[in-house]
Length: 172
Length: 359
Image 1 (spheres, chains in turn blue, purple):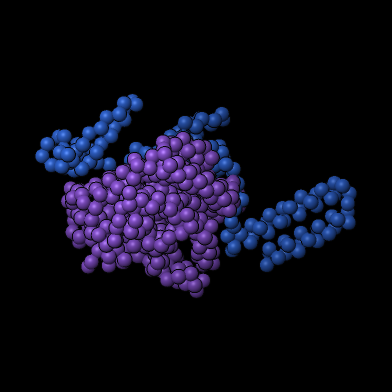
Image 2: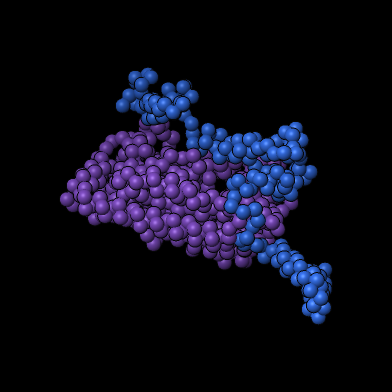
């Protein structure tokens, strides 16, 4: 097949355009396609279907009571300096601390793109040990409160000792 | 270099070897995203941050616990030519995004190329394990053991509530992306593919073409992967994907059986024509190549075409990509030159097998 534009070279680029639901297709050679600006290299970022653009579209749509757009846009991560506005455009955070610094805006977003808002999977061994210990301590403290409320002082004393041992271990 | 030598050297193990259900499942891939505590994500990285991250990963890679898991080599993107980077993309070892990161990016490859670790792509670390056939669990075991070994040296950015922190909140939590590449010609020919795939996307899974996000699907090849990363455990994510893939496999086998019973002659005609075109054509674009290869692979699976190795689809779908062709012919090729060379490579490859077409 020859190029539909120059009618000289072989058509190697097949362009399909969908504008307002109407589909048109034509065949060009590599050179004409380049001249027409029709070559969209799928390996070059920034094509129209970029997921992050979709995400930032989702973020920009957000409006929630209590926040006027200017206030939201001025939210800034104190660690890396990224603003919330920048995040909505890039679809990516600047550093790990952004998660805490943008926490107020993050929850509704996570509800939309994820099933839950807290992690239940794998925990790293090193920093995870601390997290697991914290989780255990919290559970023990809740149990202690319950025991006191129920005036089960024997159980409460046991729990208090257990908590003390754990806290001492954590302090070492 | 002869074609068979070139292919022998250029093929990763996932392209050569088989695996469970490999008549339908091409490969099972697990990607795990991790970041190092105390450094901005690559999007805000300075040159020195990037170099430090690369050094930290390199040190972690040289520990005993990592070396027990294979032989690894790290290379920075800037030390690879654009063509070599593109070859790695075509082999699915790095992402197109990393290939663009010639300043800050690096990749660690295991010698059998079943494992690749991208450094400073969207996240600091992305561990990728790719195995042939339906082996998601095995792939996850491999990825998680490498993750553990790296973690013994590195402190990951981990949040008590949100889990592993990633640059994009679509990856936060487990940081895992499990994906299965499937060849579904039976469902495509019987016209039920769209209905099934839209059902798949309703259970929290995504369906894409073979080169990931935004790529169209040619040759009846589809990638099915999880979208949710937060709230479910890694095992739940993998089990969910696995059970959907198992159902798709069942539907595909049924569809093939039906086609054979009801439209045998048409099917034989179709796959034989495609085989003839691949064996004799003088020009082939990459789209037609994939479509014809899909037919031929279906013909092999159904016993219509004999003597051609079933691996031909995987092998040629990779080795007829633009960068691979230019590597093999050792020169830059325009699109129309590539079509001519591609056809030549396919003819030569098909002549290596002692083929027979049964009617």
